[in-house]
Image 1 (cartoon, helix red, strand yellow):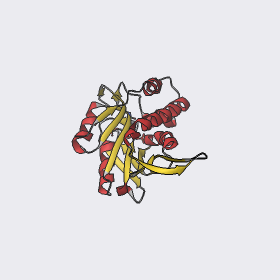
Image 2: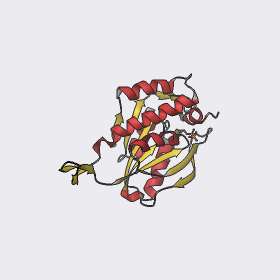
Image 3: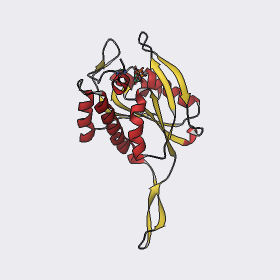
Image 4: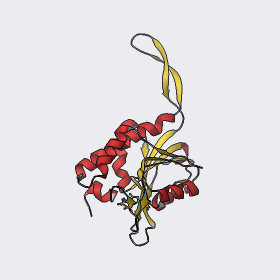
Length: 209
Ligand code: PRP
Ligand code: URA
């Protein structure tokens, strides 16, 4: 069964509070989402494998460490996932970025896929699927199925805020996928919004309604 990690670093928790506040405007919201994404990436990459290499410093020869193992691929779910990409790329600039376009039908709450473009070698990469919100879990579930159908074998899911309902869906459908959250919230309301949540992530990032 996949693990669920709530990243409780004080900086993540502090910034998340300001992301949640309704009076936080678009500019500040976007900056904070980027910052929290970078901090989360720092924690998520804690287990990346290292290998020893020998280099020359200006002074002498040294045996030192470098990343080994699979390369990383980021897969934001459009639109809101885009708001987390730049922050992560600051830490992992060599990561390739694929895109999955999904929107949630407001009536049925079911995801509708409208776009997908991925690096050609996704089967050789450790993929991190990125979306600020894991609500019913429908969007992340579909995105992960889509990636697996195309050959992906190593996937982590990174969201700012998750609802218990969404977490259960991913655990059941994708027991091989670990989930990383900045917060596991209380519940979904009758409109499918996370409570207490942060509202509509896409609208708050891009100033739409
Ligand atoms: C939001 C959010 C997730 C999805 C989560 O996207 O960014 O992708 O809802 O809900 P779920 O877990 O119930 O599927 P939305 O459909 O609002 O599209 P947008 O990012 O284009 O605004
Ligand atoms: N999508 C959002 O943007 N926010 C929610 O609370 C649920 C789904």
